[in-house]
Length: 121
Image 1: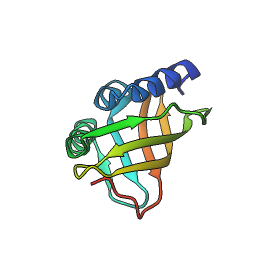
Image 2: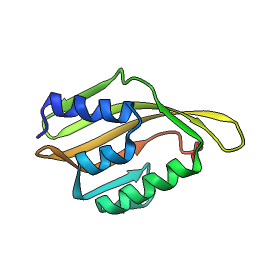
Image 3: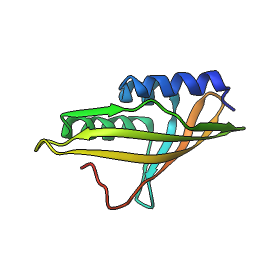
Image 4: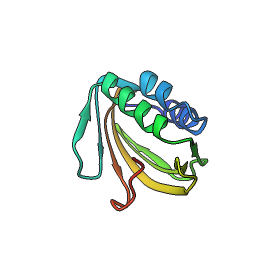
C-alpha cells in the first residue's frame, strides 16, 4: 500500500512532464494499463514504449496541477488534466480519471476513464 508521500511524489513527477521516468520508477515490472474498455497493455517495458510513441506524436503535452486525488489502502484515484498540441497546431484538453492498484510502493494496475470520442493518436 502506498503512503501519501509516495503518491504525491508520483503526481509531482507527472506534473513535471517526466512521463517515462514516472513509469520506470513507480510501476511494477508486470504492471498493466488500460484506456476505457480498450485492450490491456502489459509489462513496464511495453508501457514505456507506448508512452514514447504518444509523446513522439505530439509536439507538446503539459500536465495541469492535480487538484483532486485520493488514496484508499492500495487503491488510488487521480484526476489528470492534460493539454495537448497536435502536429497540425490544434490543441486539445484530456480530462481523465486514473484508477490505480498498488502493491507496496509500485503501481500494478491502472485504468484510465475519459471521453471515448477523444483520442490523442
